[in-house]
Image 1 (cartoon, protein in one colour):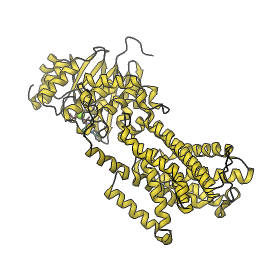
Image 2: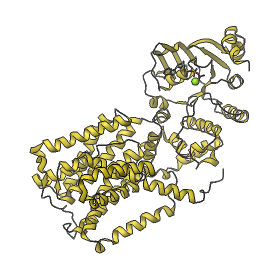
Image 3: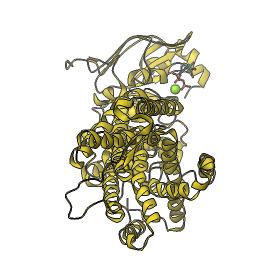
Length: 323
Length: 254
Ligand SMILES: Nc1ncnc2c1ncn2[C@@H]1O[C@H](COP(=O)(O)OP(=O)(O)OP(=O)(O)O)[C@@H](O)[C@H]1O
Ligand SMILES: [Mg+2]
């Protein structure tokens, strides 16, 4: 992770980006819809990757931050007619604040206890959305949300413009997260994941690094939540369901932890899979579980991780500089 | 805060109990700046526990620890590192899945505010790389920089431990059996490496190999069942009948 990415590693992402840019006119509106959903979920999955992949912290409550972002859109636009320029910073800001509070609680624990606390906190957020009816309209959710009013020459009402809008949001999140994981701070996060005790005696304030990672992760997930509500035109407690958190966790595990693009790919796979099997909705959780077990057994490092390992095994070893 | 006359390390009445077991029992020690001191003693004497208390990884049951005149008894480990303390481990404690260079970079940025920078790629911080590579050069591992640490030999991992500990230019260095498990040739390389360290660095070294201990240090402290039972020049300690009985007798003279 210290060296510059070799050029051939960039070929696949560049081709994928070109396809994503060029594809919309050729796609059915159904596929375009799924692709838009994938891009937004990819933001949330990549935000969780910062936590799970780079810090080694498995959160089962990531839907809470998505939810805060999404409800910010719902409440601010329906009550105050707030525009995108207000909603975006408020939504991301509230997600950061929620993560700053939840992080204080969750980071008191490690391992499976961390998982349990984040799960419990996620349920708290869901409970608030469900019960705080005066603010959230409870089970009904808030519907009829407009598309974002961005100062662009074309409207985002159509499926294709909104797709490009989601793509821009995805690229922004990817850029921010890419910079973070390749920064000295990102290196510190990986060190914490590998050995907290060694990091401590080297001079790192381990808790602080985890906390900052946790808060940033929540903020990015909140950004995804803002886009999600604008996309749906609706926000409700189902957006904060435990199954949302589980799906996001699976996107990361399936695509490949600590790769950013892997979780994005995982988001696409899960979103498409979910809709393809939607005829059998009852079995969706079963399929999720099977996919999870399959990932753990056959590709514990995820799809991108497995591909990288295979390509590294076939490539000649990188040249070592002279000592 | 830290008068020039202060000891590099001052332990007073340091005690650590694990349940009923007193791994360290009322240990008092003064280490002068620039001193090289060996800590010896049979297995389970409490040597590693002593280091863990000084580094802050374990909290003492009683007693005080001062580093260059400053009381650090309750200070978090990372704050002690920032005050110039570094240690190595008896059982190699590195980042096995990361490359040699990344291990070193983590150590190099540990005491710099750079470790919290998240707006620029690490690759842009040329000074960090230069320092990490210089460290690897000094322990003879530069050629292995791209290798994952788990692929290194045991001896190479021991050398990397030293590089990591030196990365923050420590004032007090704790070395826990640096030659443990090394073949003779590797052990001699390690001794040469340690002998070449900046004489300004105060070093405390736990060593089972008496020859190594006496070669690297001028003064020896003997621990036994958590207590200091002898303390003095290598020659005095060697001649001490109690030490011969409990330690040298058991181990065979070196
Ligand atoms: N975390 C712990 N919990 C309980 N007992 C411990 C713990 N750490 C050490 N001990 C006990 O404390 C005593 C001192 O252990 P320590 O590791 O400090 O010895 P040592 O002098 O380093 O021995 P060695 O030469 O084998 O490395 C031993 O009896 C050990 O079993
Ligand atoms: Mg020991």
